[in-house]
Image (cartoon, each protein chain N blue to C red):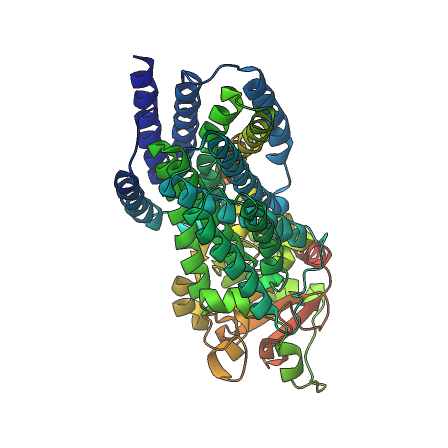
Length: 459
Length: 98
């Protein structure tokens, strides 16, 4: 009887998870999606607690309490830290999968119950789980800037990485054939942990949106593998939902950079570029906050193009003040969002939403580019590669072919940047030297703050 | 426990992946960050497996591993759902002009 209750709870949970994601498709219904997700998870946990195999609740309770206590502060981080938090939670997901796989292997080894199916599933689970764990920790460290964010490369890097993964996979195959050779188990686990670290070392900040999405897919797949190990359909379904979400996001991110998965993972973006750009002195025009304020108020349409610099400077609230001021004067202000702007998918949207900018003002790259030539002022805030015209015109540039927002086609472009140093990828940006571009130097928050002051005193 | 053979498991996996791809394809790009934190919380369904390991109490080691796994998954559930809701609350439409 209780067995049936558990299965009913699992079926309800599965349905609720699907609805949860379906409702997330639009901002109007999205919060209902969270409710469905919470309900689904509650059913799943209650259904599991009813399981007759559970003999003690003491340790479960401790785990649940510790997790809750750790989870609450993690949900209150500032929104600029959301990429780190996300990477960290992928790490926890991978860790849980790796630990459950390890425990199951030890238990089944003792009882002599390792079948080919079980061992195969466990091998996949621990490889994916542990590499997601350390890889995501590294990604979180880079995003938090605890670890240097520049890509670190050395000779034979890809050879070493793939070699390690290869040894782990071969050990896994031997373990499947002879499950009692337990000595191989720590080898597989250890190599996966090391591989996770090595995989992320050569990845630079500009590639983080893709890598986070990819780690998301791995975390989902490790939950699927856990479902195969425990013969649990709910785990397989929910893990597959997460895995497909990670996959879709990774594909969108790769397309937005015109790169392939292999290129992102093994290409070490940003390392090649520094030498390629000719280091000559070129002239550019800079503007004061007063100039910028005047040009903004004289415009009839303004497009703001935010990038990681806006997030770093926490300038989204200054941007909102400019938006408020200009819209009150009847100036049409839109925000052009490049899919890989920031450090994770959708990063800019969340920051602008936090600053109370209505979401119907946020426009996708493909849509805004048609209107760019009619736009009076394009205001670029801390975005670099996503507005670099070299992507359209210079076949020698590392970012050639990447779709960009055509800020250079606007009648006037104002670019805010801290200094003239090339951006993260180390690629020189012709936009800054163009005739129709004015540079507004300074930290994004401070520089835009001055513009706001000028707007207010000027009116 | 009801047993699941490899073919049924693969069937479930394939169908769930197709549903996932179709449903998530429709998610607005606006909401990709909340999407990631929500799917994160959902994939913390690993809590189910962790609870079983921690509760079966077969050996001290497996109980320890299970307990840590429960804590890790629960962290993702709590923080994932809470932060998703916190972000979604911020997405507002333009107030209607009077």
